[in-house]
Image (cartoon, rainbow, N blue to C red; front, top):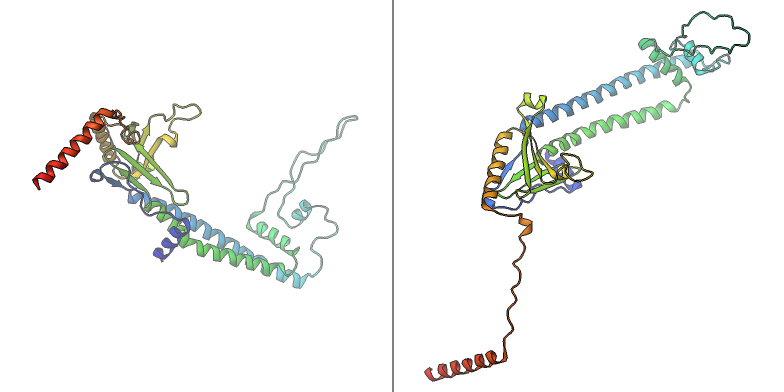
Length: 317
């Protein structure tokens, strides 16, 4: 099933499977990927999110069933109006059904002549446990017309169906997001491709690299992961740009061999600078060389030489 969902997602999003290698010697090409433990961490977060969503669905389904059953019994016993005429506000109604408590305050004192009247304390809203929470929804449901519950059931079933459909889809997206991380290094440049829904490719030439560093968070330290940050010239030095601007920084995210990648980039960067090679983008076609115009005498001499060569060839044949 994963293979089918994978092909559908790649077709819909039009994502190429592999990036083109950057400029450099094909024999020097090295490909790195994010560590497998990073994928397990991502999968754990996805699973926890699915469990939380499932718990929410079960909670509201149980509450809906209890509210529907209680409303059906109440309407069979008391078919009269829900809210009595003596109820002036929803706070009074909620207090009557036991979901809101009155605010407790100091005893009323006598107001002095000319003094501004004091305002009465507002009711303090506090649901009295699960019974009060459930009773509040029961009383609210009594206001609904009879056809409202079938509609709510239809919406509930649509939500459950959507939850079941999104499980393989979100799993495929999470897995593809890990599989389509590419970190490619040659002897003259590197290329980083990340993302699935929002694809991003960063290509950096060794002619502009300024800094290579390894960063590691506490969770990454436990899992043996680290990030390799590669910064090029201009990052954070231009007006309006902060240090570590993504336009000037490439990140090998959550790799398991960060020190190996750092040492490889530094070694190739050292060889690149010792060789004195420039930016590959600066190497265009060689400039055209202007040739001097041929004079009339030189052209005549060339013609005479050609005529004599032809005559000599005829005599020899």
